[in-house]
Image (cartoon, rainbow over all chains, first blue to last red; front, side, top):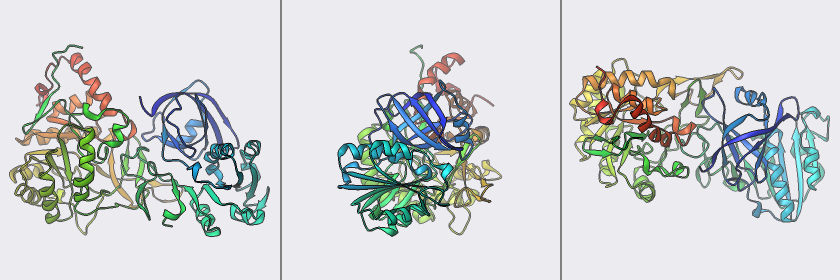
Length: 246
Length: 306
């Protein structure tokens, strides 16, 4: 078996009212880079559900997902000991080697999770890591302390100003006046665009699209880039900023 | 498992080890699934639909979840026939040693002719499957596959420039599938493949707009299986050329059912996307199902249901 396996749920708990963390136990050797994703089969649903990988160990995969539809709602009702059929190690992931001396990581909402493992690897590699996390409001915050615990400098923005800088991630970046030399980002499309508009520094962004298979066979999630057509699930989800057509 | 079981079938002189063939558009040019298992176990492969020019296809989102299936409006994304011949087929050749089925689409008779003429020269290609039915692409008119005379015209034109067996892949989005199949047969088709996807639509009720950017797309998956069996049955009984059955096949039992309806070979489509091992599992289950149902030679059951 390659890339597909049966995983046992060993943890499934809410972090906020609609964001959950699930820990799956099973084979993890196909995961090679932060920013890759898993594709989960769920009873009664035809297509698998792609979820970004937050972190992994030799035998566990941590995912953080927001309950937005039938699939994720079903996941939130699952309990420890239940099993899931999962494809793992999908997508290209972030390139840790591309970073310089000071990396900026920018996450919005459920775009935050894949940056966690990325921050860990960047800090292990050495160099300064600043993390800017954007949420709508205080009660939607998650993983801020976890990023701090890794040793990253963490800045928060909320749209309503209930925590951190009032406004968007770009406002927090301006206010902190960070002199980063490379960035990595994952979040909603308008956030990714605003980020690229506010800096000329090179970086990588992770994109979303509705997928059929998640492993490159169906061409469902293609996008046009300056370096040719790419499948979000295969050549993506991470793209270098200079290849993106906004 | 008894070792006297025979899973082989023959399509217009092309002998297949087993009747299981991934359907065009669900298997690319083989390399993605080959990362999961050795694809040489397959009967053959119907590779990604190919057009004259490179195509990006339709805007995204172009996939929608459905009960028991999915809608796609990929819109024939492919690198164009010249790049398929120069790059994709040689790459496939390295990992897949068997003859393949080339799937050709076009927006004019000229395009079908040019693509088929080129692909016909490829030694690797055993059968040409002419897609007259893709419901995703609109070129100012209805698809060739919705009228007997138009389907026949494509068939005649393609047959005139090719040497390999030509299967016409039909759309189910018609009133009388038999009339179209017969028109193709009379125009020289060596076989019929059916069914392509059913035109479908989903609406995002929160946003009050279609899920698919192109509004509509092709519905496939296990929900369409009974429609496919019915159409295979009708066409196999009305025509004298072999039929490749396609539509919602998920199991070895489905393969057997499709063959009893009249299919000589069976294509597996959407299942490859949900479970990358679908074809492998089906091929491994076939002998078990044959034994259970008392079938020694799979080719014996083709069209046994009258």
